[in-house]
Length: 84
Image (cartoon, rainbow, N blue to C red; front, side, top):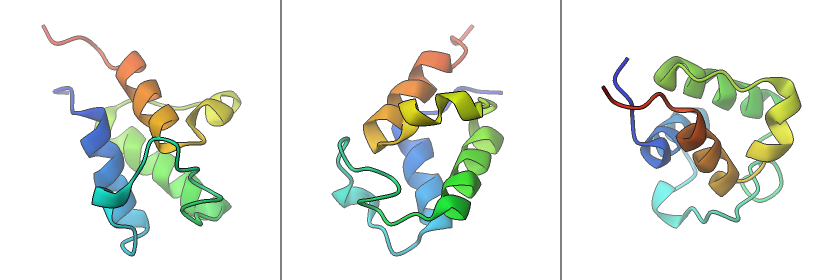
């Protein structure tokens, strides 16, 4: 799978899960559940959507690391396979 831009992957997944969120207004400090009002099912759908788009699985024990937009982008960037 071709690596994707982590920030664009997060924005695209959020557009699908919560279309009312404007990706242009996202800040790295935005908390997914509290600030963006994602409920637990939306959060899980976001994780699944990102796994499908990036081939990066986020195990449950890493959920605290991806609680913010910036944390999620950083996690995806750190776990992305380098381009050949």
